[in-house]
Image (cartoon, rainbow, N blue to C red; front, side):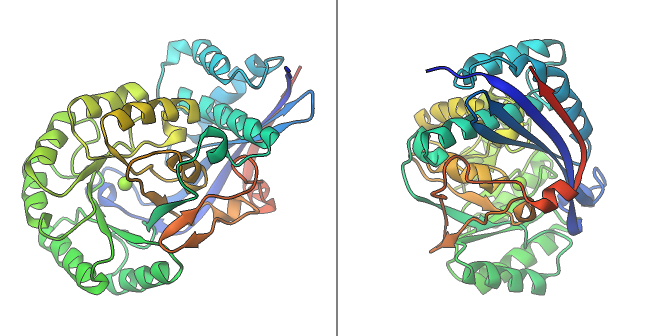
Length: 372
Ligand SMILES: [Mg+2]
């Protein structure tokens, strides 16, 4: 049974954040505080009346480039069978081959790829996790949004209490203060406050190798689930040295924009937790291929951001996995994810189980529709 894509709607929306967000990249002066996130939404419609919703995003610059690339390649989708997801991904990548197989170009394609997976699962009447092949119905989840560097320690404690009371299982806080003693003080205070609750820290790539070594040694006895991005995202060798030297697991990979970039971390044995992001690596098709490699190396998994997509993908992974709980995206959708007993529950609605809210439409700044 074949079908054909007859319409592609593409929208660019800007989600404002409640307050400007700072991690270590801001404190080192490399980035400005983040005030909004740019989203790329695609809706694919078929001749037989099936529909899929796709999502990609960019923090700080890049949103307009993703939107422009999506608009440019979208006509290639018209007339294609929506089940031929691999063929469509290849065709879209070759349409933009001149601008590469990673970064903004493939992140634009990700929005189509995710829409096609959503469509396929909706058509089957299955949640995406079950279409792929679920290992579990709920995935351990931890909160990130309560522990940024601009947040005073008392507020982080309150945020953590609220997260745990809401059924979230772990807490991550940012590190990378100009004074490293302040980092240790904050981690110690939170560890003391949380007792044995799983705790992670995230340095957002801002330590050099010497500082990362020093900090990992100082943090190694604090029973952390992982130390995230202690070094530049592309320093596979530096990460590998830390992973071999210290007991605390090392996590990284959120910034990487293709399977190839992740392979460098995997082949150097740089990480214990791999942290891919489906929109950033080109979509669900690419993400699943990467998971197969990670599974064979017995890596743990902690996908970055976009829990609405990653709850489904992480539910299919056989080894240890944690999904990052960010409530930022909630106003974009009519549905809410449920947290229970430390886990994010895989929605039982077909597909991703998401529909765009009126608020998402109100935040939309550009739209294009392509038809046959
Ligand atoms: Mg991170």
